Image (tube, rainbow, N blue to C red):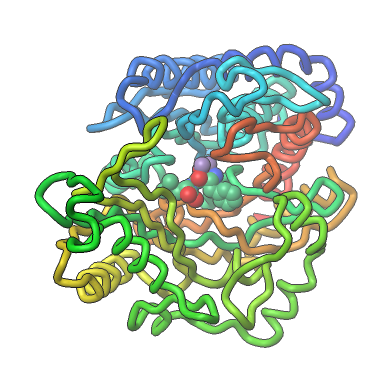
Length: 461
Ligand code: BES
Ligand code: MN
Ligand code: MN
């Protein structure tokens, strides 16, 4: 007999199992599942095994480690009644590299609690948030309150573009059939101002190589007579923004849909304290495309960023050298209706066009992803709103997230399923940075909120 998950039942279960949940999460966080670096391949496999084991222990059926050309995908499901709605939970067990290690206060792969927060690589992005779903599922199984069917797909290549997951999704349409995709891999404004992201930006990521002379040269003997690729690259990059900080690539904004005045007003009414934002980041002044607020610049406008730039001598001391090559890694965040393919193409053409004849340039695309906007009038979104309202005591504010989860657009395109982004992280959780953290409060709050989502989703369906 199906029971209904009351707040009291949920809280009791969490209270009784609190420490074990945390111990298990710590075990999860100790795996060095860095997808960007092949030296961690064994850790990746061990992490996938751990996720599969925990899903099985929580009560999932048909748990399978699905091999791909890259890192495995962990799948599991619990079908209670084919007449009931199905939620597909997606997350990722891979993490970003921990470097620079010396900036971590405690070891990145030895989770440590300080001030009520778990410090570890992946604590928030996304192991901590994936684990909330595993434990919420256990809770529903153990208390007999699972109100709908549930499928889990936890991948190991999100941080490197999910290209093998795309292949998997296309090949497993029947198995992945669901009414909604539920993802906890985004942020809230704060625990006092709970929010739900209603969009993700797309991404076009590429690397450029600028080559000058055929070898490194003495910077005194040849300097002044030969184009220095580092100087030229810096100039080319600087020219990609104009005085209004608009991107100068011809056609870059052509497809961008302008938001209506009402939409802009609604987004700008979210709590935002400019002074606190500046203090938090240690900057005296903000920067960005003129005519837009910070919330718009990070949520609804496309951007171009240099993620890394190097060339020549970067070791200790001085070496007088005019480098033969200089490099940069450049990303562009995209908004509806830009496509990564087109943006990559126009960037490449423009970059080749602006190169002076004294150098040769090469543009190498890495990965891409398409932007998405998620519906706010769906049953699933309403279920998320109700769940958060009940657990936080406050209605969530809809916001636009600046980050990207490339697979979300593909779920829509290939499976025809919309997503709810019910993330419990904070922008200040230092995702991808040293000292990544996740608040214990957020972790348990997530476990509390997720069963409520399933309950309301089943009820409203
Ligand atoms: N979880 C993040 C994305 C995110 C973070 C969305 C915060 C919204 C708020 C995800 O793991 C991520 O980092 N994605 C990458 C893209 C990927 C292709 C490397 C990103 O956004 O840079
Ligand atoms: Mn993530
Ligand atoms: Mn990430």
